[in-house]
Length: 320
Image (cartoon, rainbow, N blue to C red; front, side):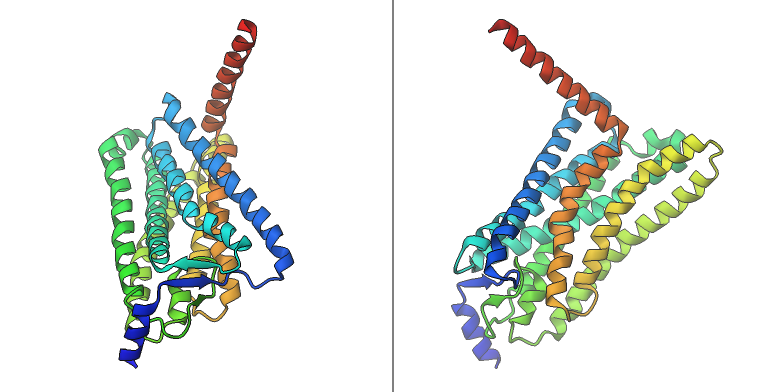
């Protein structure tokens, strides 16, 4: 069995991404939906990064983390969405072996990085609300750089381990991946290797990634809520909760979908695809919208940039 699996594995040059099991007539609707969402992701996240980089008032730790979050959201959705849209029009729906490896590696890199960035943002809000007088000292530029670099480092290590483990499996059962992108669990389903050790290591990786970040977020927000409830001013409480509620909403959607996808037993492939949409497309689309619409500083910076562009445009019209 092991020899046959190894032989067949060496012959695999590509895979087939089955995608969504719907009527062919619905592919056009799905393509348009993916295209719309991806366009919003690009506009929202590029816009957010541009606003943060151009407005000096946003040169703070919170916006430094938010800019990196937009960068991560933009790139990991770009790893998934373009290929999914191409496959809606493709007859073969194929992806090369190297393409599948690359897609899994980059997705694992960015999704794990996002989890650690969200934990860093929770810690930042904890310091800002619970220790405001020490905020500028404790959240120094050096610490912010270390937290972001550490997030990318953890993402890279996790991606290397996950990808190397997955593609040492033998794929003799089938070439058809029952998903719309290359992911670990769908690849496990078409492997003829013994998956016991692989599943144990994957579960261990998920645990050491998800548990610490969730603990940091829960502990940070427990202290935040406790501190906010002690604020006598209704306006002060409202402002503090407004700052954090958007972050909690993003965390809930992301971690809820990830836990369903990677921690709960893999018994519902179609539901797994829907859960995957939450963190591959929905979360990257919502992040810039939530953080901009609920954030006074970002809205003011956007109005300022928009006003400058209008003035410049009017000046050009006057010259003409």
